Length: 192
Image: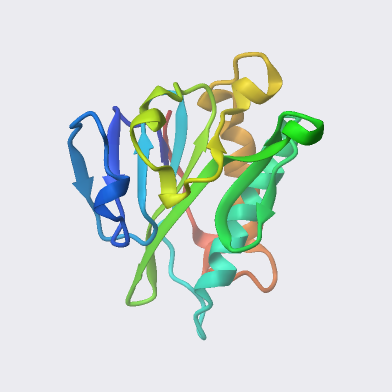
């Protein structure tokens, strides 16, 4: 498991449509993961689990496990995250009453080759949302993007959620029925 903050970069998954790319001419790195276009940068905790999935492989269960980990870590910070049917990642409600809407707070894009995962997730902590103004994030035109900092109204940096994410990952990967094989021998590397 590699947990880190990136320099600012747009990455496009295999399903990215040209109409979703940056409107300001910013460079994009095309990658071999699933999902669509996203941004990574300072203030965002990015996780790259490199694990072997248990046979028979259940990639959807693996994605749901990552979502559960992020939902639990958000709860530790006082944020109520949830899933939205038909959309990967973790969401929160922003606004109230008739103005309430779903906003993505964590994105997931993975690749599985020969049973081993690559790529992973990005949890928006204290990052700027300005880069998202130039793209169609994750191919979703009808929802916004937010950060833990914006939801709580106080600054929460990646280092503030690091231990929680790390703990929930270790617990989820070691749990009975986990989609991950041999997780009890996993090691975590951190650069946040």
